[in-house]
Amino acid sequence: MRFSLLFAVFFVSCSLSWGQTQTLSPQVSRKIDSVFAAWNKGNSPGAVVGVVHKGQLVYQKAFGYADVQKRHPLTVQHQFWVASVAKQFTAACVALLAEEGKLHLQDDVRKYLPELPAFKDTVRIEHLLYHTSGLRDGFTLIGLTLKGEKHYTNARVLEMLYRQQELNFSPGTRHEYNNGGYVLLAQLVERVSGQSFAAFAQERIFKPLGMTHSHFYGKISKAIPQLAQGYGVTYKNNQTRYKPVHFKANTVGSSGLVTTLEDLVKWDQNFYRNQMGQKNQALVQLLTTSGRLRNGEPIPYALGLEVDIYKGVPTITHTGSDPGYMAELVRFPEHELSIICLANTNDLYSLTQRLQQIGEWFLPPTGAAASIGQLPQAPSAAPLESLPGIYLNLENLSDARYVTRQGEKLLAATSPKGFQETLKPSSPGVFSNEWLPSRYYAFSGLPETSNISLEYRSWATRQSLEKVDSAQYTPQVLEQFTGTYYSPELKKRFRVTARKGQLRLSLFRLVHLPFLSVAGHRFLFDLQGNNCLEFQVGKDGRLEGFTFSREAVTRLWFVKK
Image 1 (cartoon, one colour):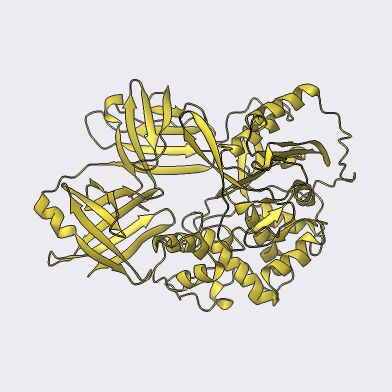
Image 2 (cartoon, helix red, strand yellow):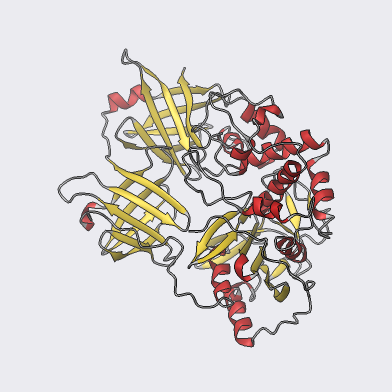
């Protein structure tokens, strides 16, 4: 796989055309329309879609309503909150400062943010950019204090990170997506430049590129002109229902950007002919070259951009999703082809795959396999009846698959009450998602043993999980685990109770989340995803506390009070 995408060979001599001077066949246009047809009928929010090919906007169309209640149709001029698509702009701000020599990507972050604790291993700027820092995610930490979205501010994220005593892992040894790291980068830009982050991005990116409708607002408000109303979705009695929602946080760096289709086209074209900073193409190469772990292994992430291979063709993507909004920009750089989607609804599932499919209609046939390469092979396939169970990543104790059987098919969920995707067999020991064939599950294990491992792959994502045995405890033993536990890093207490022979996490004495017990004094439960408590017993046999793990937080310590 080619993880370094060089753009120096691309110099687009023609100016960007908004008149669709390139001929797009009616057949392809209708096929694109069909992808979003579900949001172009009835009374629903929708999306704005654009296709840019060789410097020209050959397709642009709006589907659905910007305001369902007022029945205001979406237009290609509407503005959208783009969530994590903002990260590539944050990374570009850091890269511009590096180009000027005002910082180096290998610098210790504490050189500019001395409030960050001096951990055993140095956290460098490049670690934040590539999501390899090992820092716990500040947003997740806020969530664990049971605070609402209005508390998701840059100041609060920084406060939580400055209180941490341990890292999830040694910097540079693992790739783990981290929103809080990009808040740190935004703060770093302010410290180095002497400007607010929004002002720096405006002066150094949006103004030079003519992106007149882009701004880091940080929060959603009615003062933003032509902002499409965001909508959440629920399903009841086979009916889809939309309700106005929006991200209530106030944050820049990891999110916070509002922009338009027209402005994102300008941003996209700058990757072929850079007009930022010193106008060198080396800046673009830096932005689009994937990082590496300390051992030299490449990761599928560049500077705020995901780098991958789709059916043999290099791609650059990044999804954004916050309450009420979704966004995605898929680029096939070797073919000067990009597909952009901005949505004011949360039900455009598998958006990246939808846009990649559209891209195929413009690309020459390659006959190549999917990006993950050859199908994973199970060295020794375990029998089907032995596959159901709980599979856990023993390194971070958060990645999990809950596998059940339905005839010759398997069902898999990422948390005890999570959505179950249907798997179908594709080769001995290997199953694929019924609707997304790029997702594979390879089970390995000897038929006569219960030691079964699972390798999960989805595009550039790979997870190695082990099947864990369930554990049974008497009511007397369970009682020993109950009590109040305190995290000095969160400054928060959790209460563990036992009810009906089962441990539970009690929240506000009203909600009691049941635990699933597995070997090793580990208990799993569902709270907006998979969570794991691992109780720690001292040498004297006394229960000292537990470590808490979930996505982007590994082994956070709680002491028993």
